[in-house]
Length: 313
Image 1 (cartoon, rainbow, N blue to C red):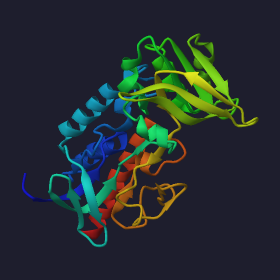
Image 2 (image 1 turned 120 degrees about the vertical axis):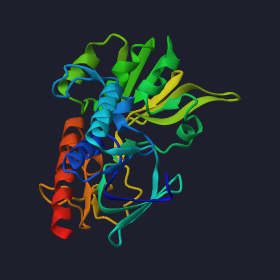
Image 3 (image 1 turned 135 degrees about the vertical axis):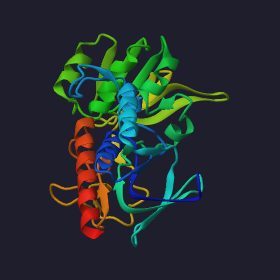
């Protein structure tokens, strides 16, 4: 690959939004170029069963992303395994620099960088990351066969992780600050009926316990948010599942954002505060955060990019 490359449409990110944008931009004969980023395929590559993708009663997340990637390639989208590290949106053509030292220029940009897992910010959490503390059950659940583990959180992410981990763990304790879950009702029903899962209501994690040589988790210290009582639970793994935050590092000081960093788009549009720059998927969606809505926004972004280019050529 040359050190410089120009494209009409540069797509940054490769989840449902990015790949769908690639499909539609290719159909519009825009010869798009898609840079996959640090996690090709996005969050769905760390998901197992997907039951709400239209046309598939059940599909594995990684398989779905591979299919979408292939579809995008088959339509003509050039897909590059690289990471954009710097983005200049001050003038057109826009300029993006990559981790591999390539400079990309483009007449329009579609941002589909998605979101990533949130962390609690505890020193002990940081200490044991990768050594008993994880934010990805599908990545690390296998290592806890027959062990007791805890999951922190109360939304869809936490419930899905807890249910998945019952395939390996002898017991899963779900720790939540409230006494009701924010997840979908069908997921709540499955969790509460699962004999391997024990909810612990009104508690929050205050410390991960373990050994230093070697690094290994032995338990957690949790506090009752009502009474202040502190108890210790034995476990071998701690899964943090408190949601996700938008991956906005490239544009957080350039584009207009709100609600914790989500990119602002115009009503019923993917247009951002800079003409020619479009945002789709979890980078902008603070409300739905679904694969199917991300794909829909990817379609919108490509169609709007086509319109923008035709009006500005």
